[in-house]
Image 1: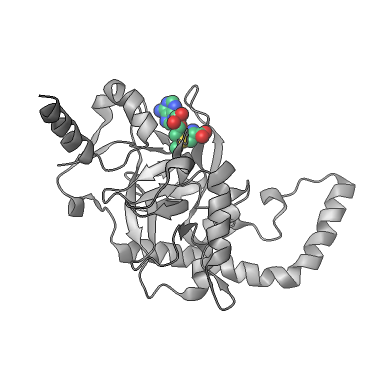
Image 2: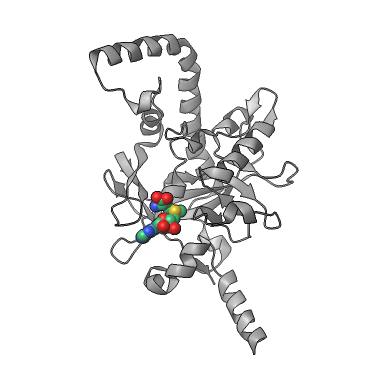
Length: 287
Ligand SMILES: C[S@@+](CC[C@H](N)C(=O)[O-])C[C@H]1O[C@@H](n2cnc3c(N)ncnc32)[C@H](O)[C@@H]1O
């Protein structure tokens, strides 16, 4: 009898696609109405991988171009920073010489950023701060270390609400503190090809260079606040330009993984205006 109950539990558990394990255990019964159901894995993708690549490349190219301009501008930026301190004027974009948010607005037509959530006791959330997000846009990325289903993550996952699970069991640890942060930095320092880094570590700070990389802070929807974005897996294609991989906020935990890098993006389910908070669905059932 126990075995039958265990089997039933296992098959129900396996049908969940995305889950932040502690959250699901504690809240599933409260939020049954907000479950997202899809017919099969292939039906779950709202955007093709090519469309996701298209948006990322558009942003990354602008970011890299402005970064290239950085070197020439750095001295001027330091001078103007000093001047602003003297005159008391406010700096834009946390003091970055070139504003990542401007690059985002220019390339994607909107900006997102972290702010206290609209929901009580939900901590930080992610908001559209400028521009307009049309339905079916790549709105954010879920940063973090990528663990294959068979790799150990026990230590990093204890009390960690940022461990995201894909349907194939791949895990993304998007925690920007403690041991998770140390692991990401160490893997990122390890992987480089020639002069090129293979990932971006700035999502671990308050001012990510890739402003999309705040998706781990998107809160779960509720009955009053329906989901306006959903998660979608994106395997980085081989042809993704090597010099732009340094903008990707994901890295494999192990060096010798023989499959494309797994990223997860958030896609808008409807048009979203400036001022609105992003809400995803922490529970998706694949039937
Ligand atoms: C992936 S984190 C999201 C970021 C989180 N808000 C923060 O500030 O760190 C998931 C955690 O956010 C909180 N959270 C997410 N959605 C929520 C909601 N609808 N109501 C209350 N808390 C929520 C829960 O504490 C959950 O464990």
